[in-house]
Picture 1: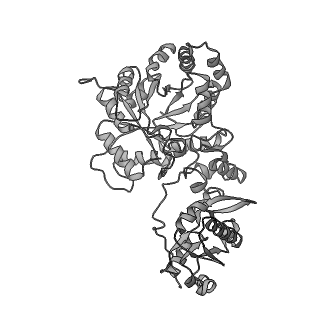
Picture 2: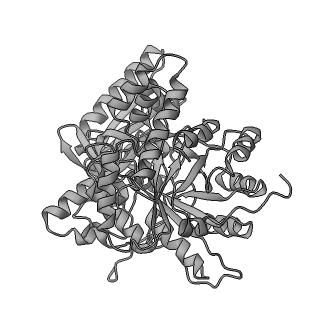
Picture 3: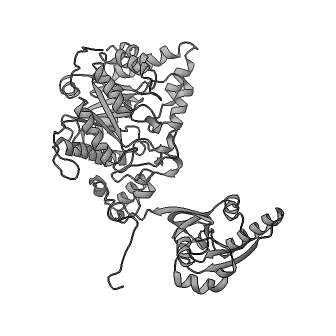
Length: 220
Length: 303
């Protein structure tokens, strides 16, 4: 899933300066699960914006909405309907894909992002999300016991750990983080597949995904 | 300066000399090369190679390539460090062609310290290649082709080095990566700083059991310590360095005003032991800004 974090209130307020009627749009998928842009967060941010504006002596009308998947045009249109016509600007609490989907649909309205989209990851435990995938387009996980060195190694190394690994197998840049290559070593050892760590892996092919990425199904 | 005698090619030294000594030259921040040239002049005839760091600790400095040219101009034998942190595969190959065209024939292939350890923390880390891939790349250039198979008009013939970390914990993943470097083909290996001779001996035992080690020379990394505070700082902040407590205590107990002499004595003692017990093939001294003390360390080591 996509993990995001909300921007600081001040930054959001600066983006919205001058607008009097806005629509805050959350997303019911990834960013709901990571507590960044679901129904609850839309409610909290909307209240904060109203309160801060009235403190400053400004009236700000804030409408609220949540689209089940903000990155799907049909769902956005179905949920928002005519609401968009009533506002001057839209504040998206979706990921970057959600923001851009709405920007495409409502070209005449300014769209502002309330979140910083950070990574593809998973919930490790209540309130903790970890990066798991860099969407590199050339999956390497068959060689590394299902642990991605592209994003879980701070340097994205493909042929083993760097010399900066700390005592106990921790990462050079953060003593709290495990060295991905030590994790890979332990996993492969457990599976009796350490020969995979002896093999040389060529430099990554960055042309696998031509940026900006585009995938077309054959039977579309 | 002008008319300086040619230094012996490092590759030849590796093949013929019993105990090899290289020293690190750490460029400073800025275009003033006065101190650097002083260090080069002081060390060029005392060591077999001067090994120049590449934006060491991810701190932006005068470049490795420029410093290697200076060493060459002053009659020393430069070893060019190249890390994967700041350049992609195009830039690395171009730099290597330039280096070779100017008589810089030795390259040390490194991953590079993380951006986060340095002074430009907001920079984009490159790491287009890793150190093993970089070693393969230099071999490819040595074969007269670039990475994608195009013929080079004028080839290169680099003597290739890389690093290893005897103090790594756990050591096994490091050894597997080290093996890949050896498989790629190495001329020399310099280790990260070692302080514990038993640890170095264990590392050498492991090395002798590995494949593709014929003719590979191992230089033990020596980082002198000048005070307990510095040692503790390095343990906390410098990737790959672990100074044992008994050495921190030893320098701590030296009276004020004698710390430099103590540090020189301690580093000299390590080198002497490595040489006398033939633990490995030589040493690489990283004095980190105190290059002027290297001659005294060599004297203390009996070299």
